[in-house]
Image (cartoon, rainbow, N blue to C red; front, side):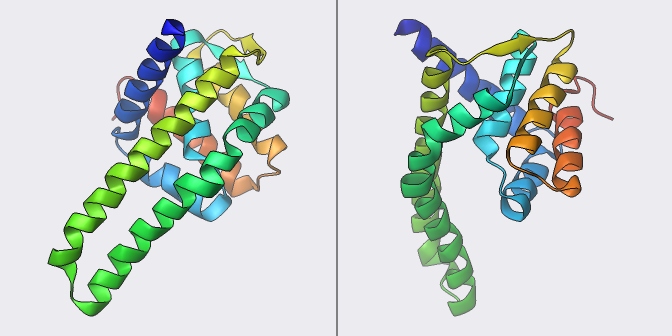
Length: 175
């Protein structure tokens, strides 16, 4: 399992670095909130593309979504909802300073939950998900995102957003 832990750590580091790139966080959250996309699954596709030039097909996307569905539904989403609600509530009632510590605590728990999701993805991938070699990281990410969009019956705005995410996340020399 040492390989699992090393890959989980590599994926986590990649996710933090990629999420910090200009525009990636805002676009990822818009795709999540407006189109029901899974940020960790998008980051996994980008990580596979960037680190290995590999693309996932429909079956791989579905297997990863299935492997993380319960964690997302019963752990990540409720913590995220609580954190977002607290932020809104504290602003409405003027309790921003006292609620800040609780907000930060929820944010920390949410990140730990996200890391569990990422671990489940890597474990499931190592358990036998087929991926396809591509010439470049961008080609691999776009192939994965095409499969993702088709598997999730995404609308054109989501598809455009996924391709924009590829450009922003994998561009080594952003303007």
